[in-house]
Length: 86
Image (tube, rainbow, N blue to C red; front, top):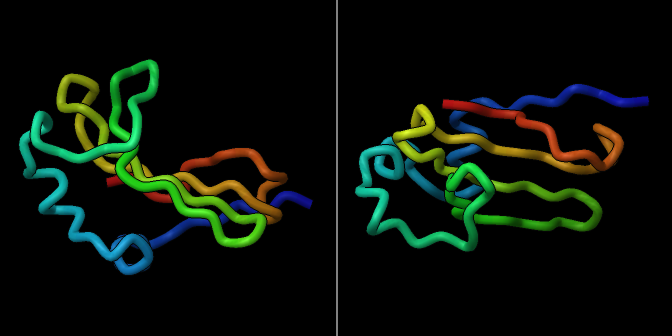
């Protein structure tokens, strides 16, 4: 059975050990990232703990800006879903 999970901002910042306000205020050209998606958004961090995976994205300002955390694991049928946005 699929269960919808969410994260609070505090939980997400604690998990990634990152201040999201600082990430949002940073110049896009100076941000270290792993890869970009087809929209150009930046994958900042990707973590795997057993069968669970979390991804932290910094959306480009031209795409509306913001932060997204995605989760993939046994709680949602191993499909990436957004669990936090800012």
